[in-house]
Length: 204
Ligand SMILES: [Mg+2]
Image 1 (cartoon, protein in one colour):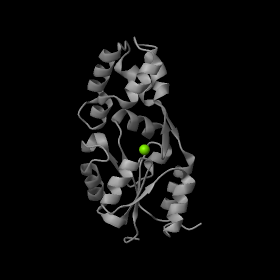
Image 2 (image 1 turned 180 degrees about the vertical axis):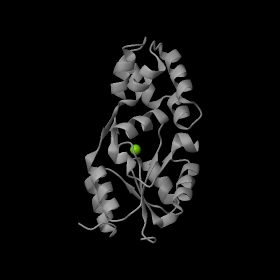
Image 3 (image 1 turned 90 degrees about the vertical axis):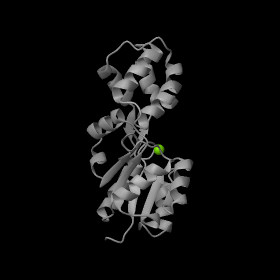
Image 4 (image 1 turned 30 degrees about the vertical axis):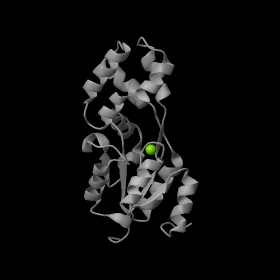
């Protein structure tokens, strides 16, 4: 099936759900902040952007967050609290399993960090079943920056319409579509499946 397309899966809110309020509750209990202040801080702080674009190591991220919020636990404690926020999304995982059975190659394409990936790899067996992975913290660029899309094209050896791309974020999908990728905004497993059936990529 060398001429068939390859499938690119976003991770967060496609294959795994995540909830930073879980981490916020546990980390806040060991800090000088309230959980509601930490929720926004953890999920959207410039420190997280720096960590996920590879500009901070895990230890540097921990030290910067700990000093900003008065966290009094160890790196190991912080790591556990920070990463234990994920749960599997069975619909997209089932779709991925079907695509594998049909012989398609599949890849993961994620804005993420090494704590999250370590946790997901350890806890969710589906994660091992892909042909390759592009992570923002390894590439040094975040979606929708062009460098990370170019890294995926290099990894797969494919370009344009040979890549079928599922992601829940409009700006990421737009950047893929601009390169000619067959980009599908993932709103639910049902809408994505319908879009793939409409284009003849999967059969009922
Ligand atoms: Mg996502």
